[in-house]
Amino acid sequence: MSTSVAERRNAVAAHRKNSLHRQRLWALWGSYAALSVFVVMFLVPPFYTLMTSLKSSAEISAQTGSPWLVQHPTLENFWYLITYPNFQRYYMNSIIVTLLTVSVSMVISILAAFSLSRMGFWGSQTLSTGVFLTYLVPPSLLFIPLFQIIGSLGLINNFWCLVLLYPTLAVPFCTWIMIGYFSSIPRELDEAALIDGAGYLQMLWKIFIPVAMPGIIAATIFAFTVSWGAFLYPLAYLYTSNQMVLTVGIISDLIRGDVFQWGKIMAACLLASLPPIVIYAFLMDYYVAGLTAGSTKG
Amino acid sequence: MADGASVSIGVTAPRQSTGRKTTMQKFAQRRSTTGFLLCLPLILLIAGFVIYPAFYAIYLSMLNKKMTAFVGLGNFQFLLKRHTFQLVIFQSCLFAVTSVVLKALIGFVLAHLMHNIPGKNQKIWRGLLLVPWVIPLALSTLTWWWMFDPSYSAFNWVLNQFGFANVPWLGVGWIARFCTIAVNVWFGTPFFMIMYLAALKSVPEQLYEAAAIDGAHGLQKLFYVTLPMMRNIISITVLFSLITTFADFDIVRILTAGGPQDMTHVFATYAFQVGIQSGDIPLGAADSLFMFPILAFAAFFVLRGVTQRTKEIAA
View: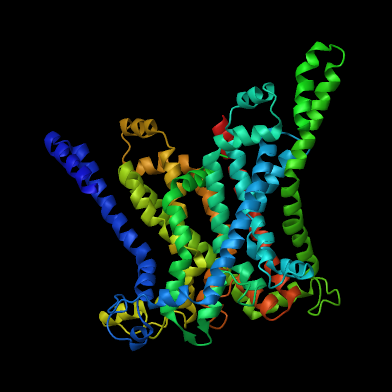
């Protein structure tokens, strides 16, 4: 596709013999060349993950030939993981935690954003600012007091503590971008709904949510990303394999002392990265729009 | 719906000329009560799991190891005197500043390159360049760890092919520091790229045309048109990334776990080691609290930048 566009441009440039065009053409090809270098650099680790995951343990420990290429591709690592009960459990736990986190976060943030963008109450302005500041609080700042709090709730080594804690990471940003999207909805729409006798929740359900769907998708992806990839909380609060989620399960289960089963680890990384990759492949545009709007607009 | 009732009162109010003010007030009051109730889950969440832990952390940091006696600022003093902690402060600052500067520069270059190519292809290239940022960091760091493996690693094999000796990537302090920064740059650059690309697209084309008519060349356009127009977004992105990089945990924890000789520890990993692994909760809490002033400083300027930006757009 890129070549056909470039060829057309090439023809046009040759026809006009215009120096400006020629300059632009050079810029275009230069950009493509530089971008290719960056793409190769950025994709080296994923490529290496794939190659290693296709190798048998024997091939990895033989240490002959190029490590970058696979000589006898095999799916045994993937098969091992798919039939490995612990791995199935990590996957299940990750899915449960993520689904619950995403739904809880979305309900909390949509309600709050609706209220903060439309119904002023005493302190609502301060609350909006506070929500944004909470977004800037990194998980590593508070994980030690939270360890004590989770302990006093009796939730240490229980993946339900993640369902309780992940929303604190997801909700502030989700609320923030939802406020942006809701504020851009013209007020005439709510006035029309009020005149037609709609209540607030009806207004939210029938007008705000459908109109702000792109924002809701972006916020959902954010909440998903946060809860699927989080590492610190599960590492600090979970320690038996029946409660672990993917990020910590892979590390603690497939690395035993000094034995690294790299083929299996890499295959597990691929399988665990699959859901985010699939989601981003289809919904990247919404996410990028939401993310850039979140900081460049509001 | 209770709110439906309040709306109908509001609509019928104009007919009753005397009762109008009070019903309108009632309407406003009920509106703000509903507003508050809708925010209540958010308020409870933030109060319970952000604000309360923050104050609890301050309290914890002033206890002794067994949490039986109050020691005031003893933990902070103890940490500051410790050589390991001095290394932590140095490495955290080095890690955060170097990574953010590199990410910002490479992201800026990438955004410009992307801006040059036509829109239809841009999507594919953007998708490819965003891959590092899409894979969960804890998992991609595992791959990096494997590539840095000393015995039969991807990088050492390439070096051997060119006749160089093996490099102990994660075994020597300064090289390990470089490795943690490299992984962070790899992971974080795509974020800068998309932020800057969005900012570049929002610069009006007329400004460049005007500059060209006035005889500005490429670099002048960059310094007098692009950079001033992007200034706000650049500062917001840099400060925001400074916060997340400074508080980073995953990369150092997986890649080196603080070693060799505690040279790669950052605040978060050291707090984890002291507080969770060694069980000295107060010392760990004190360690993470050292991050607070820097985070608060950056957060203040991010907030100011965002507010300014909102005003600019509204104007």
